[in-house]
Length: 557
Image (cartoon, rainbow, N blue to C red; front, side):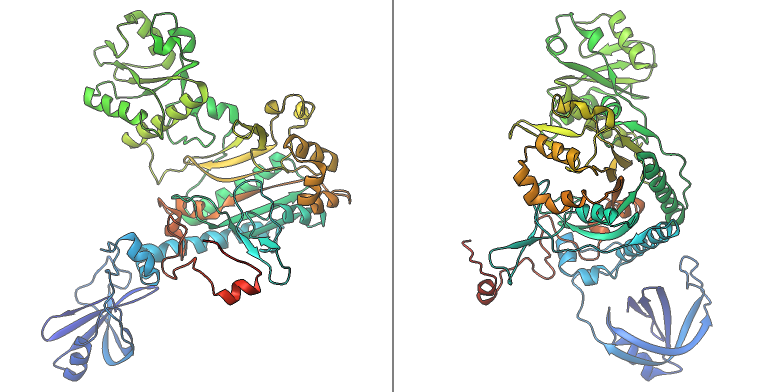
């Protein structure tokens, strides 16, 4: 029961199921006993009714069933219900923590029901597309060996092997490569993965991937195949036609957008000014490694209050800029800058030409070290896109980012780490630099990005044992360490491993984007909170001493 309305001689009940609302009618004149019984029913009671379907005199065309009603002649109460702690309505009065504790009630709301239906459609369309082009769905183990590269593993103690542990897979990476060695040239799996990492809106400790691998392919083969999947999903689920996806090199994405997951729903590309702003005794620019900015079209009349708010935004610790320089190109053609004490009108005109700015535009400029300044300007660009309404959730602009660096340097540990994972193949032409200049080596790797969100990524894999050994060496593994952790994969490469590559999509993120949501939690049946807890079932939780004893474990917490 959704709700009831007592109108004296008539009682109406809205009966809800997965398929919608049906109006039930009870009449005091024709069956007073039945009507009295109906009036005693409460919200969320589970009932069964029979009666005659009739045309409604006051039709509700906003409801799929709004033209009919049921004139009830019999009612049976299947189960009573306590009064829910929040309203089971589209606009509920329950807070998030309360709704997560009673998630089985929250899932009755249309919002969550429709999100899970969308998720189902996405999964079915994915399976249909991949099945139709020859992919096999093959399951891989959940209890695997821990390989402590990347995020932290969730570990599972083994009762039968005292002191030893399984890990839950962060992805099926090694197993899907072994399937390629085994001759299954097109594999996929919609698979649960696990990472013990800090949580946020687009992270959960357990999540789902569309995991895929192909043999005897080039990077272009993989991009074309999964671009096709992306188009299929948009057409089938959102009825949106998506054209050819642009392919942007990593270096260009960083230079133009300050991010390897650029939101290209709007322009506002970075413009570098370093070469034309120095030498004017403006210390902020003279001492900077990079001076770079964006042009916000139509914002030339921003007030001082609005500009101060933008300055406060870039100074936030999570953004990290020291300050903001602006130039207002006013509608009357005048150029007003926060740095015009150091720069002439001609100087500012040269800046405007570099930006291709027109009267009525606003130029926003940051300065500092290169990586930090680009990152801060990326945040400012997204903020301006938000303020100007350019980040429409119903507009989709997917793209590929390609040619990633193979490795990234970590100052704290003074070593290189794999940007994707240790099995990513370098560009063949860059292999000679693997030991002499590792930071220069590009990977045969690619990400698919939609509206500023990385929804998938993959690479061509290393299938040669000698090259894999070189890669492990650059990453700081001894031969013994590499054999201990990855020996079964490296050994497999000695038995005719084919060239292969693949990709994994973040299925939860894809569903959230397609559904116009802000958090992947809303597209999972039973998510965890920010502390990684399921507050509905109260897990994780301590286990009994007898269980610990069986597992040969002691806790000191």
